[in-house]
Length: 95
Image 1 (cartoon, rainbow, N blue to C red):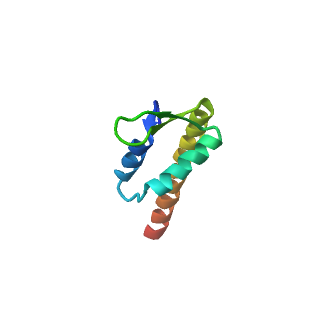
Image 2 (spheres, rainbow, N blue to C red):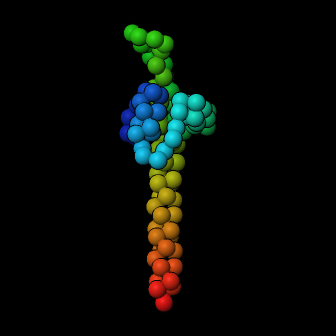
Image 3 (cartoon, rainbow, N blue to C red):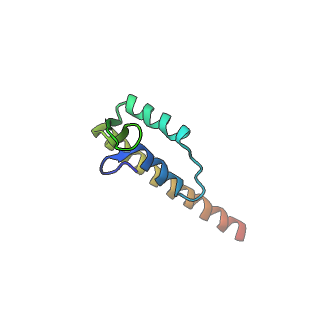
């Protein structure tokens, strides 16, 4: 949601809500964004809005981009291992 540019917090929430089988709300997402910012993985800035309160925009920092790459690599490894396990057990069940 944050790669490669800057996104308004509400946009992030809406993008996550569009993912089937994922149940999220603002009260879930904003604390996570705040924690990631506090840990140095995100930067944020507030911008004036013509309607309503200021908008908070988030973007990955260089350490955030590095962490994202690590997590994506780990996810790939995890899904491949899961598929191998599933395939092995299906073969055993057929025997």
